[in-house]
Length: 399
Ligand SMILES: [Ca+2]
Ligand SMILES: [Ca+2]
Ligand SMILES: [Ca+2]
Ligand SMILES: [Ca+2]
Image (cartoon, rainbow, N blue to C red; front, side, top):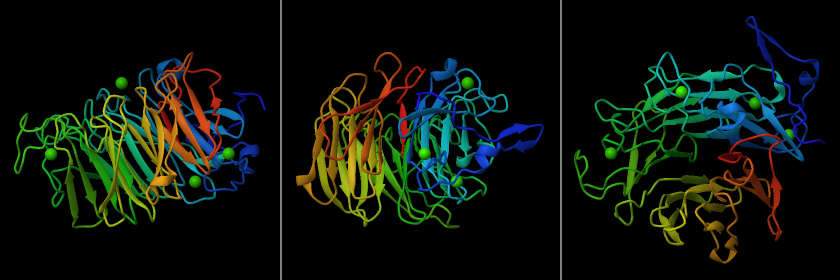
């Protein structure tokens, strides 16, 4: 199959009706990670500066690299800055959730939008925005999705008078978005200048959500600004984001050092537990499902270790260190299983995701237009996926 062959046919919205091509109607998605209905698990790759700077997402399916189209993108939208693969609507096909955090919404510059692109080609894409779009909130900067659960980060959203304190939005199925910030009743912590609550998120068991707040300052109780340990970071566990009365737990940076950015990336693997990174310190905490810290993996802070995290279904964690530190794969259960992929060019490890037994690693700065490296579970050599056309292919990856 030729790279870039336009095989993916999405529903096209024409004058308010969805026109479904006959070929698309026949799509029968065979696995939970099959988006295009060819029976092969897919991985989505974001290129937010691709397609003449509107942003692009390509689906890697077997040997094919196929662009995903949505109508109405504008220059500078950053479509593909974040991406997740999940079955949002409960049909047999996986769907894509794509952030466009620089999209202008209702006249508000860079408020941000998120697209749900349904797999199988039977439904038109849906665009989600905040109920009150705010200039430079960057809604869609971060995403977490599992089945019908969707969380959307807007870490640059102002909360009350606190600039860039951050907020997140959650929904179940196709219901309304619920907004949560540190000022929401019973969420631990306070909104403060530049906290960037919602920078990272991971769904835990049931409706639990782990939220990274990497630019939080460790400054004791109460609300203080520009004091204490600047950008030491924190992480907030929300037990059930749809409960009428929220309950939560806040963990502060274990190092309490300025610039460690605890919570920069977070992950969860069912049955194994949570992971929370501190790229400034170059460390990643592994916690069990009861949120007890069981292990801290360290590599030092010079190479951005913990910049990106991805959890596999079988209890492995990939840790990206894109500034020259390669990627490490560690296990919640057994330290002897640790493995390392050597450093490679182009911000190798900027993004990571598992798909079945394979690990996909973004190299968005690789020449000429970014690439993604694919590692088999035990294979020594990496395969490389490149887009037919692009700018920084691999800024985000999702399997
Ligand atoms: Ca597929
Ligand atoms: Ca679906
Ligand atoms: Ca814009
Ligand atoms: Ca705070």
